[in-house]
Image (cartoon, rainbow, N blue to C red):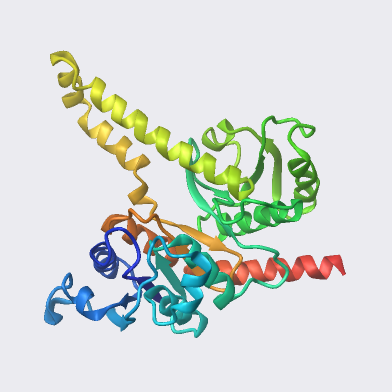
Length: 334
């Protein structure tokens, strides 16, 4: 398995990408290709004698900047690290691509260079979410802000396939994110999507409210990209706010500091549980190749986690299982 990493993408490139790749090269049975400007990448790599044998550099001399126009910047810069990394998957030189660079450009490249799986209308981002029952996803996490009911129905199918094949969740429960649990609740989009999701070959559990994401009512939460992205970023911000507030409370006075000392291991575990770096990235489902989107602020740990996401998606055969599910839908429709 070869995973192409866009070494020049992200706020801390190429250092973060190199550190993440080095960590992953030691932990995973994969070949990692760092794609970017060799001279800049080499600065953060150990001497060749100490370098992991399963790590190499693929030269790409241009960079798609974070503020670049997602469409024009992506399609015009064919020597850019992101373009070259995506094309490695297109040309079957790699099975997955990971980038913390310009997310709009990455979505454009994945859509145009890899193509959408036959039978699907639009790809969707399966963003990781945690609940009382463990790992889950919300889809779409921001790729499509304006959706039709069929898009949401297909997001449910994609999320279910991913949760089962990559996350190991048997018969994952799929819920439609809404303002109430009753089937009559919501707007015209969710009302129409409800009926379509009920017809999909998935374990659809109906509408869920926002708390249903966290209390484990569903393993896959379906939403359009606007709602999904707002929910995702609100959850991330709230988790950070609560951890910071708890830290401040446990520093206020002698008794609080003693309590903090006694609870240090538990607090450390809690912080790890909500730390984005331990989840790393979100796969763009629906394209013909594993594409993992990471935050621009990703550090080395987050990049390593994103490579882990890519590894599990390839190992689980996510693309193959999605293609099979789509062929089945087409056959049943005809």
